Amino acid sequence: MAERTITTESLRVTRVRVRVVPVLSTMIASLAALAPLVSTAPLMPPLGFLMLLAWRLLRPELWPVWIGLPLGLFDDLVSGQPLGTAISLWTLTLLVLDLMDSYFIWRDFWIDWLVGAIFAIIYMLAGYWFSGLRSSPMAIETLLPQIALSILCFPGLVRICVRLDRWRLPL
Image (cartoon, rainbow, N blue to C red; front, top):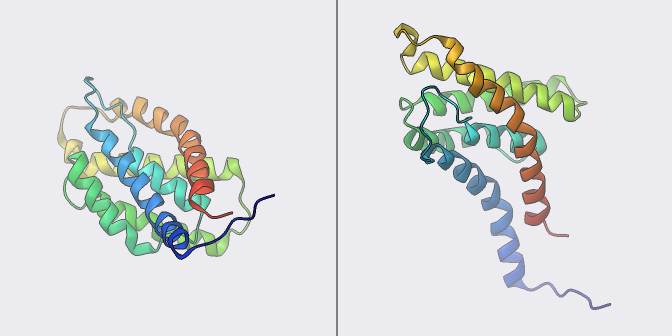
Protein backbone atom coordinates (compact mmCIF):
# COMPACT_ATOMS: atom_id res chain seq x y z
CA MET A 1 0.00 0.00 0.00
CA ALA A 2 1.16 3.49 -0.73
CA GLU A 3 1.70 5.64 2.31
CA ARG A 4 0.27 9.11 2.46
CA THR A 5 2.86 11.78 2.92
CA ILE A 6 1.76 14.79 4.88
CA THR A 7 3.07 18.05 3.54
CA THR A 8 2.75 21.49 5.02
CA GLU A 9 0.47 22.41 2.13
CA SER A 10 -1.91 19.55 2.87
CA LEU A 11 -1.91 20.47 6.55
CA ARG A 12 -2.73 24.07 5.68
CA VAL A 13 -5.58 23.00 3.39
CA THR A 14 -6.92 20.67 6.09
CA ARG A 15 -6.81 23.39 8.75
CA VAL A 16 -8.68 25.79 6.47
CA ARG A 17 -11.23 23.13 5.58
CA VAL A 18 -11.81 22.27 9.26
CA ARG A 19 -12.60 25.89 10.08
CA VAL A 20 -14.37 27.06 6.94
CA VAL A 21 -16.72 24.21 5.98
CA PRO A 22 -19.21 24.57 8.89
CA VAL A 23 -19.38 28.35 8.57
CA LEU A 24 -19.66 28.28 4.78
CA SER A 25 -22.32 25.54 4.79
CA THR A 26 -24.40 27.54 7.27
CA MET A 27 -24.08 30.67 5.15
CA ILE A 28 -25.05 28.77 1.99
CA ALA A 29 -28.08 27.37 3.81
CA SER A 30 -29.04 30.93 4.78
CA LEU A 31 -28.86 31.89 1.11
CA ALA A 32 -31.74 29.50 0.41
CA ALA A 33 -34.02 32.34 1.54
CA LEU A 34 -33.20 34.00 -1.79
CA ALA A 35 -34.77 31.16 -3.78
CA PRO A 36 -37.45 32.51 -6.11
CA LEU A 37 -40.43 30.74 -4.54
CA VAL A 38 -43.84 32.35 -4.74
CA SER A 39 -46.43 31.42 -2.14
CA THR A 40 -49.21 33.07 -0.21
CA ALA A 41 -47.86 31.90 3.15
CA PRO A 42 -44.38 31.31 4.55
CA LEU A 43 -43.19 27.91 3.42
CA MET A 44 -39.38 27.97 3.23
CA PRO A 45 -37.83 26.63 6.43
CA PRO A 46 -35.09 28.71 8.05
CA LEU A 47 -32.35 26.51 6.62
CA GLY A 48 -29.50 28.63 7.96
CA PHE A 49 -30.78 28.28 11.51
CA LEU A 50 -31.45 24.57 11.06
CA MET A 51 -27.93 24.08 9.68
CA LEU A 52 -26.51 25.94 12.69
CA LEU A 53 -28.51 23.63 14.97
CA ALA A 54 -27.41 20.54 13.06
CA TRP A 55 -23.73 21.47 13.31
CA ARG A 56 -24.08 22.40 16.97
CA LEU A 57 -25.83 19.17 17.90
CA LEU A 58 -23.39 17.09 15.83
CA ARG A 59 -20.23 18.80 17.10
CA PRO A 60 -20.88 20.66 20.38
CA GLU A 61 -17.27 21.85 20.59
CA LEU A 62 -17.36 23.36 17.12
CA TRP A 63 -19.23 26.61 17.68
CA PRO A 64 -18.19 29.25 20.16
CA VAL A 65 -21.21 31.12 21.50
CA TRP A 66 -20.20 34.35 19.75
CA ILE A 67 -20.51 32.74 16.28
CA GLY A 68 -24.25 33.43 16.48
CA LEU A 69 -23.55 37.13 16.04
CA PRO A 70 -21.80 37.15 12.62
CA LEU A 71 -23.79 34.23 11.21
CA GLY A 72 -27.04 35.73 12.50
CA LEU A 73 -26.12 39.09 10.97
CA PHE A 74 -25.53 37.40 7.62
CA ASP A 75 -28.88 35.62 7.90
CA ASP A 76 -30.68 38.84 8.86
CA LEU A 77 -29.22 40.63 5.86
CA VAL A 78 -30.11 37.81 3.47
CA SER A 79 -33.52 36.78 4.79
CA GLY A 80 -35.05 40.21 5.18
CA GLN A 81 -35.98 39.75 8.83
CA PRO A 82 -35.60 42.84 11.01
CA LEU A 83 -31.94 43.40 11.81
CA GLY A 84 -31.07 41.71 15.08
CA THR A 85 -33.65 38.94 14.91
CA ALA A 86 -31.31 36.13 13.89
CA ILE A 87 -28.40 37.72 15.74
CA SER A 88 -30.22 37.52 19.06
CA LEU A 89 -32.06 34.24 18.45
CA TRP A 90 -29.01 32.37 17.15
CA THR A 91 -26.87 33.59 20.05
CA LEU A 92 -29.58 32.71 22.58
CA THR A 93 -29.93 29.27 20.99
CA LEU A 94 -26.21 28.61 21.32
CA LEU A 95 -26.27 29.79 24.93
CA VAL A 96 -29.20 27.53 25.81
CA LEU A 97 -27.59 24.56 24.04
CA ASP A 98 -24.38 25.14 26.01
CA LEU A 99 -26.43 25.18 29.19
CA MET A 100 -28.26 22.01 28.15
CA ASP A 101 -24.96 20.25 27.44
CA SER A 102 -23.85 20.85 31.00
CA TYR A 103 -26.99 19.09 32.32
CA PHE A 104 -27.72 16.40 29.75
CA ILE A 105 -24.81 14.19 28.85
CA TRP A 106 -26.49 11.41 26.90
CA ARG A 107 -28.25 12.15 23.61
CA ASP A 108 -29.26 10.18 20.54
CA PHE A 109 -30.80 10.88 17.15
CA TRP A 110 -34.37 11.15 18.44
CA ILE A 111 -33.47 13.54 21.23
CA ASP A 112 -31.47 15.71 18.81
CA TRP A 113 -34.44 15.72 16.42
CA LEU A 114 -36.76 16.72 19.27
CA VAL A 115 -34.38 19.47 20.39
CA GLY A 116 -34.07 20.69 16.79
CA ALA A 117 -37.86 20.68 16.38
CA ILE A 118 -38.43 22.61 19.60
CA PHE A 119 -35.80 25.21 18.74
CA ALA A 120 -37.15 25.54 15.17
CA ILE A 121 -40.68 26.15 16.47
CA ILE A 122 -39.46 28.72 18.99
CA TYR A 123 -37.30 30.40 16.33
CA MET A 124 -40.17 30.76 13.85
CA LEU A 125 -42.65 31.97 16.47
CA ALA A 126 -40.11 34.51 17.74
CA GLY A 127 -39.40 35.61 14.15
CA TYR A 128 -43.15 36.07 13.66
CA TRP A 129 -43.30 38.19 16.79
CA PHE A 130 -40.16 40.25 16.02
CA SER A 131 -41.30 41.00 12.48
CA GLY A 132 -44.34 42.86 13.74
CA LEU A 133 -46.86 40.44 12.25
CA ARG A 134 -48.50 39.88 15.62
CA SER A 135 -50.66 42.94 14.99
CA SER A 136 -51.56 42.00 11.41
CA PRO A 137 -54.62 40.03 10.36
CA MET A 138 -52.31 37.18 9.27
CA ALA A 139 -53.03 34.32 11.62
CA ILE A 140 -50.26 32.40 13.29
CA GLU A 141 -51.72 29.23 11.75
CA THR A 142 -50.12 30.21 8.46
CA LEU A 143 -46.78 29.24 10.02
CA LEU A 144 -47.86 25.61 10.50
CA PRO A 145 -46.71 24.36 7.05
CA GLN A 146 -43.34 26.07 7.52
CA ILE A 147 -42.97 24.56 10.99
CA ALA A 148 -43.87 21.08 9.73
CA LEU A 149 -41.48 21.36 6.78
CA SER A 150 -38.70 22.56 9.10
CA ILE A 151 -39.17 19.61 11.44
CA LEU A 152 -39.15 17.18 8.52
CA CYS A 153 -36.07 18.80 6.91
CA PHE A 154 -33.94 18.72 10.05
CA PRO A 155 -32.74 15.08 9.82
CA GLY A 156 -31.70 15.65 6.21
CA LEU A 157 -29.65 18.67 7.22
CA VAL A 158 -28.01 16.65 9.98
CA ARG A 159 -27.14 14.05 7.35
CA ILE A 160 -25.56 16.74 5.17
CA CYS A 161 -23.54 17.94 8.16
CA VAL A 162 -22.34 14.39 8.84
CA ARG A 163 -21.13 14.02 5.25
CA LEU A 164 -19.46 17.41 5.29
CA ASP A 165 -17.87 16.57 8.64
CA ARG A 166 -16.40 13.35 7.25
CA TRP A 167 -14.96 15.28 4.31
CA ARG A 168 -13.55 18.17 6.32
CA LEU A 169 -11.76 16.12 8.98
CA PRO A 170 -8.50 14.37 8.14
CA LEU A 171 -8.38 10.59 8.33
